[in-house]
Length: 265
Image 1 (spheres, one colour):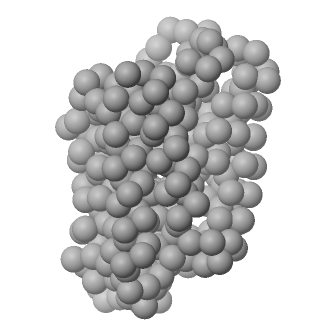
Image 2 (image 1 turned 120 degrees about the vertical axis):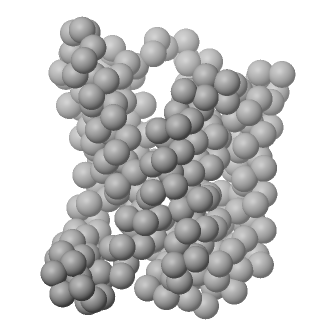
Image 3 (image 1 turned 180 degrees about the horizontal axis):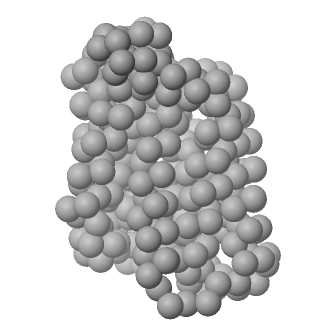
C-alpha cells in the first residue's frame, strides 16, 4: 500500500467518522475515482484505533469522570455524579451492538450497494435537516430520559445501513428529541466510544486469525493521521456547530448522494 494512499484514506476516515456525512459513501467513491486497491483489514483496524484515541483524548476529563462515577454507582447502588451519563452511553450502545452481531453479514453484502448508499445518504440527510429545523434545542445530554436513550440507541443501529452515517443519525435523533446542537453532537461522540471499541475489537480478532502479512509503516501512519484529523474535526465541529447549524452538511449529503447516483445508475 502506497504511503500517500494511507494518508489520504486515514484523513478521510478521521473526518467522516464524526461529521454527519457518511464515511461509507466516501469510501465507496475512493476506489472508483482513484482505482486504488482495497486497503485491507489491518489498515481498517488501525484507523479505527486512531479515531478511538482521538475521541478519548478530546473527552478525557468527561470519560474519566464517567468511568469513576459509574464504578461508584455500582458500589453505592445509586446514581452519583456523571454515572447517569455513563449508563446512558452504555445502554445506548446495546441496540447497535445487537444489530451488528445479527445483521453484519447483510450490511456487508446485500446493503452495500451504491444505490442503497446513495439513497441513504440523501434520505437521512433530509431527515437531519428536518430535525435541525424543527427540534426545540432546549435540553442537554445530562437531561436525557431513558426513553430518549433507547430512541438514540435504536437510531444508531440504523447506521448499519451504509450511507446512513453513525454520527449523523444519532445527532438527528438527539435533535428531534429536543437536544441542543452541541449537546446532540457531544452525546453522539461519547456514544461512539464503545461502538468503535467493539467494531475495532471485532476487526482485530479477524486480523489475528488471518494469515496475512502486515506492512507496519502505512498501519502506523494511518493510525496517527486518522487520530489527528479526527481530533481536529471534533474540536472545530463543536466550535462552529452553533453558528453554522446542520444545513451545510445536509446540502453536502444531497450533492454527494446525487453524485453517487450519477456514477452508479
